[in-house]
Length: 247
Image (cartoon, rainbow, N blue to C red):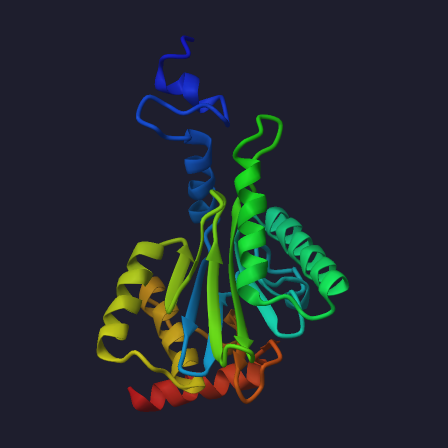
């Protein structure tokens, strides 16, 4: 097959098509969407939240052994979307970079610095023919005590990194982003409780379903408690009850 055809450019990671596109990188974004997971991040006034539906590929799998939320440092955590093995590989690399930074400089790496480092690594994967981009995207949150504000960052396989007030990635992300944009037009500053409930409502609206507490994973940081942690099933259930009472 001629390399001048679109399929010819599909074969090569490092060759631009005549339209200026890297098809293999674009296919990586499709792999993230086709994985079937949606992750949502919301940055409040003094807090940040990440949330996702917890899907088990098999009914006999132990729920405790499956997660999309990971702690990178004491104050920084992330939620991963995409191919599970690639997600874990990127988490391990992020932890390595965080540990290296702390060993070299003597203090914990800020969330934005860590995410830009992950972006640099992802971008290198798009330059080399013998490597492939990881089929995953990372949403990371932290409360930066030096800056005095929460942080929410997203990195993708192309190497692009940006901070967000709210963001969604994965299956039906366009619909989820529209929901978040509509909510932020009504209100821009959110308390921790409001940010958690906005993330849950975004997932419910996008998937057109009501969730049980065991079907959700939520990670939070705040000024009052800057250590990243996952909410317990009981805490998630309390938010679901509160939301149902409002309705």
